[in-house]
Length: 341
Image 1 (cartoon, rainbow, N blue to C red):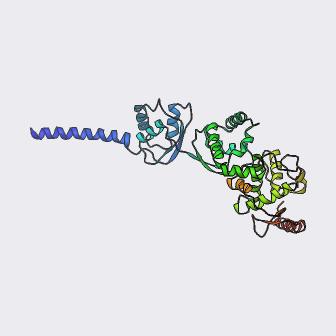
Image 2: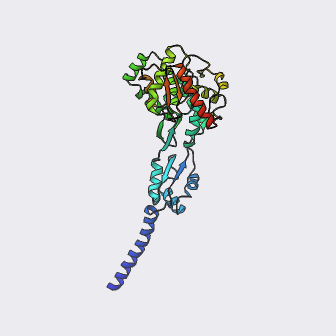
Image 3: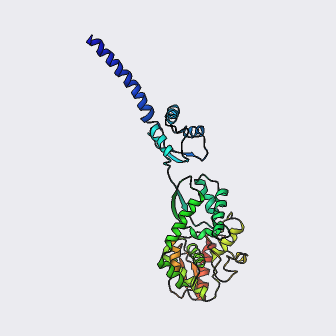
């Protein structure tokens, strides 16, 4: 009798263990066989989600059952979700229901215009570039600007994190907050002392950034040189402004390695060989160092600068036109020796 009861108990435990193991495996066992990211757009249907997860899960049927049981087939949030190897169905479902998506990294570089930037950024968001630009145009209009290009000064070169589902409004808000935070009382005092408008400061900062190649150690010297030229009523004659003017004409589809004499007459308000004064706006997205370089420009007597072939990326500075001719010839000779056209 006792032996029979024991056998029954063991059978019950075995059955319970069998079903318990199946339950545990389905809900809490490993079901992701490789790392990856699943994108769930706004308005997606449950079937789309199942199709998206197929490359990453070992058992799609078990995921479907758990998702249905937890009503994820009806309630889920769009986003970019990281499926980690070894994760369970329950953790995946909870992640998607809660909207715990993973941010994406964006590198904002020295883009010539906002449209270039959006073309790169939008590849890592749910929206296409046209929608992104149209929304930024609306934001610019609300601020009294002509279009999104006039928002260039709000952006700084750096790496940023955003969600795949970021809206243009959320995207811009982050940069607007950064911009407002950057302009402290101390910087505003320097701005007022400089006698320049903020647009002029950003335009000069963009020239400084391009001329320096983004290296901070020459930025203040370069800023001082261009302020000398500006205050003396001289044309700035900055090669990057000519390159920018030409690039604008081709929508940045051509690359110019060497500015030639024929390029100097390119018709554009940004061409500082053809026009006196500071350009109407920045020729690229800038970094914070270049803006600070204009606000804290070195006091020097320099009027001329020329690339130094002996120290690539750096320049020779002088106040002498005669010395500049010598420096320029040395650089032109170096370009010719390298067959750079």
